Length: 277
Image (tube, rainbow, N blue to C red; front, side):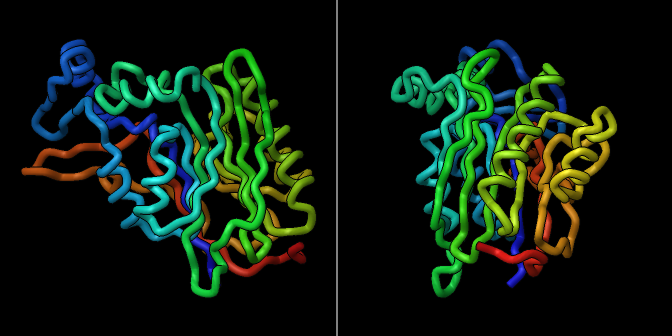
């Protein structure tokens, strides 16, 4: 049975209109909605909107980054999926951070805490069940804790979900190399998806050529992309493709609410091309 995979950085559960001028101080502090002729910017809990967007999308495996930790259970329930959550950085006072984030997401920004959340949609006969979970620490401290969630599906497919460091290019490259090494070691001969927000564009780095040559992990989404679904040991029926910007927008009275500052990336995968364990 084909596997539809999706990866999406949720931007800590916030919206991201293309007009950055809509991010105002009064919106952040007073929660006043801003709008222009085409888009709105809101400062409120967008869990219902994200849940509807994800539940309506066609996927079997979803890799989510910058996911508010408190969203794991409700997103899984909305999508009829089994979750694997791996906490990442800035989870200092989870209860307090969750409360403030629920009231004013833009006020906290990335300080709401974070997680990588992998969702496996349930399949007939239990084929979508999670049979193994592991967390691989890619960076334990400065500048931020980085963790890869490794999840094994009942049919043997392994999924590695990571979010590499931002801005500092050499750190991201080191984390991606380590993630690939650990993921391949853990998966053994089984088919593998290694995806997420790598924070490295292929046209700026040779790291993707290294991963393809050393581990067979490919293909990239696009030369300018940072969100990828690299696979090994599984047929690629439809290569990773970014959603159009409007596909992650919700229209109300002709005004668009755009979820996240990243577009989801999806791929369609077929039969395993190597033996699974």
